[in-house]
Image 1 (cartoon, rainbow, N blue to C red):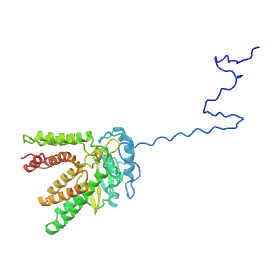
Image 2 (image 1 turned 45 degrees about the vertical axis):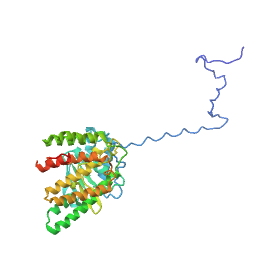
Image 3 (image 1 turned 90 degrees about the vertical axis):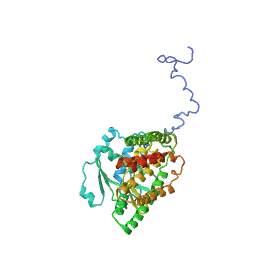
Image 4 (image 1 turned 90 degrees about the horizontal axis):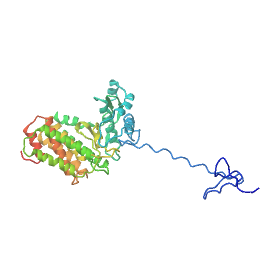
Length: 387
């Protein structure tokens, strides 16, 4: 009988158990009974990747250090940041997000208890307004090295917010204090108002610097800002033959220039800021999300807040009966302090944004008040046109 390899008839081409074991592959050590070698356990699988913060720059569900209250608002904003896959500048909340958050929000509040502890109850018209208000305040508070702090939210409901007791004096209340006085006491209180406005201007400028991103002002943000200005222009129905051409030039200049992006409060004014010494607290920032990119980075123009606050301040002072000199003092106190503390305002590219938001502020005044010749003249002046 011929000796040789015996193949396994059940597996054509395979070696039978009578043959020697196949040679080990290079670099592979095989365990045998004789060697007593035990192969090492396979390396553990890496942990799942951490959840990426999307939509809002909220990195923790816990309130910031030194904040006595605010756990409710911060936790809700943290949850919202993970549910809301935002587009750049988006302020419209998807129905599915609201449906997930609504069951956890109360519908009633104990007003007596709120008043007893000195907190402030603010009723809003819809869940959208509530969530945007929470997102804006907590995104503001999340900006590192910012001199502005956001008021803490003690309770959040489906149609209401409970803010902590106001620290300091709201600027709108300070304006009313000045308007209620006469002679020497009025001058002293006006000086106090100007000190508060100086602190506000410097704090707002440093906030814009702290929130500055590596991204330019977004195209979507520019479109919305320009569309709002053009809508106000159309409503004004100016009869000047060159007004429309000049308005197009202003908008085109805003589109063409590349601006440094930052986070903007949006719709900021004397009624939304409280001052205590050098500390400024923001009470409302529901429009802030319009200046956030898809990852929570700043894509807005600092000129919007600067010119918007100045316009709101001037309008409030005029409505309260301030003289032209008093109004100018208040206006200059804010703007001078802002420019002294802002590198963004010193950039040459800021000129195009300043033009657009100056025109928009003048058009806002024209629409809000009586259509006087003086108001129309201010719009034409902003467009650099003679009446």
